[in-house]
Amino acid sequence: MAKNKWFGTDGVRGIANVFPMNADFSFRLAAATAELICTKCKKVAIAKDTRLSGDMLEAALCAGFLSSGVDVLLLGVVPTPALTSLTPELEVDMSVMITASHNPYQDNGIKLIAADGNKFSDELTAQIEALIEKNEFIFDSDKIGRCVKSDIVLEKYKERALSAFSENMPLKGLKIVLDCANGCFSEIMLDLYSKLGAEVIALACSPNGLNINRECGSQHVDAMLNEVKKQGADLGIAVDGDGDRIKVSDEKGNLVKSEQLIAFLAQYLEKKGENLARPVVSTILSNTGLEKYVRNVLGLEYYSTPVGERPVIEKMLEVGGAIGGEESGHIVLGDYSRSGDALMVSLVLVEGLKSYQKKMSEIFPVFEEEHLFFENPRLKNREQVKMIVLNAEVQALLADCQKDLEGSGRVVVRPSGTEPLIRVWVCGSNALKVENAGNKLLALIEKLRDQ
Image 1 (cartoon, rainbow, N blue to C red):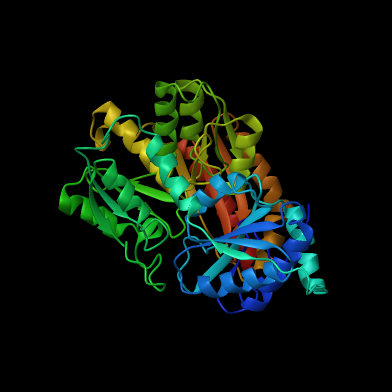
Image 2: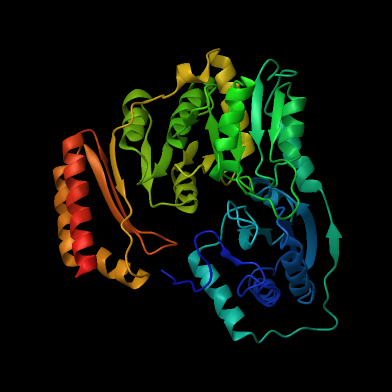
């Protein structure tokens, strides 16, 4: 597999105005993708979230594409799921989303989206990186692109969301707290939920470039939980800055786990006749109770993937999955979106809740969660993390623990993608075995760390 220098699982990310998240890198990234990708339509679409640095990076990307003879469709502030869903209809070679998702405003990122709406492979981003590093672009004075602003994606996305409902004012009678993280959904969600008849209490819906994800949204849910209790709302919904994560509260102000939402949505889509016995996909860090519920109660196939939204989406495409996701709040509805989509997930969820005519606390939890051991021992540096994860003694103990839990649970030992931590995760039906395995692994890792 190709090893990327700057691209992670979700594009390039960093501190705004500091390499690689600066104007120079962005210009070169655009020139590289123009040369490698934009060979058919000679056209690209660019969207952004609400953070301050979005304008700077947009201008640099735009200059890189235009100077390479590629036309640019500037879409403005657009949620990531809107862009991934509608890119195939834009007649472009690719789209670019400028966002650092749930991170604070000081950060920013660049996600590359293929013409079919899916993310680029590691192999392709490695080729792009090679061109960026080489930096030998040739520009032709006779080949300069044009730039056009358009709101076509926002308008089509709104229409698609509204068309999911056949009746007029289907959400009438529901009181909902919406926390939009001062991000891409700040106007859209309020507008759509109001049009659908819900009484909306709005939080964090006034972006100023500096307040995206600041003590609000899917990463900071306390304000939403408190407001649900204060207002006597039926539920609360919090999204992140670019709209691909969602967190939900019941009417008592209790946070509902994403795995429980996945289970409910799988159940509801079956009831509604939209799932048609299609698989459910989640990650190796999903509670083992979810898999048993999907297989034994719903009678559906279930697949586990490596951690991250991209592996989930790739597996869904491979097996025809109707729903997939992970506990972080990324939930993907295969028939509605090509990435995590907080708006569409929330609308299908609310529609489902209303159809059961019960309070959320009477529905959730949908399945009984199995016992979980989860620790994150901190090491000296990421080199030590890699060395210990691959240590023969650790690998042997990991195999022994998995054998002991075979059929009743799962063991995962993996490095954190962002910090010098090792994730020690054990989950299963036998609490004693789970604790025993977790404590043995944790003790060995800490012993090796301190030697």
